[in-house]
Image 1 (spheres, one colour):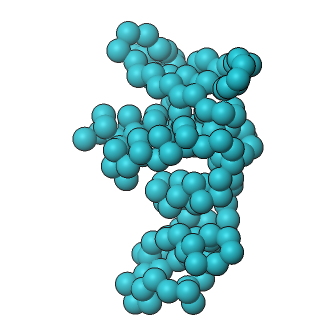
Image 2: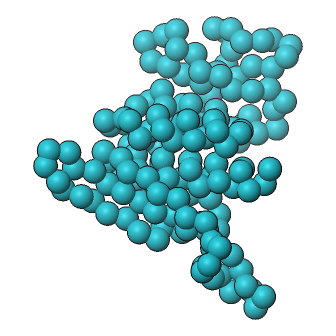
Length: 160
């Protein structure tokens, strides 16, 4: 996924007032977080919003996208529990700062992630030239989700 797409998704998360299932599903599709049973598939996941609740369905070139496609596990709700949002933090990145700011009338949470690198001796270090990303959200889970998406976008940007 392109880093601009991940940044747009992070911006969507920034604007949420609380957990939102459709955004959680968009994250699953954007990051291609397939369940184990679908991991070897050559198909793709897509969001079907035609029912009462949106679901992710699987499709491939042979069957295309349709209502009869098998649905995929709902997966974690990244926008709600903090432990699910933690799953999005890329390897080699750490939570350097976090906060809960109880300011009236708009309390918010904030996170800052830093990318650590191994030095010549194999130890994890941070310092000059390291990458940091920040995000705020109405809840800690939303702030961390947005921050982790920005970290993943930064990884994509640096690999281009």
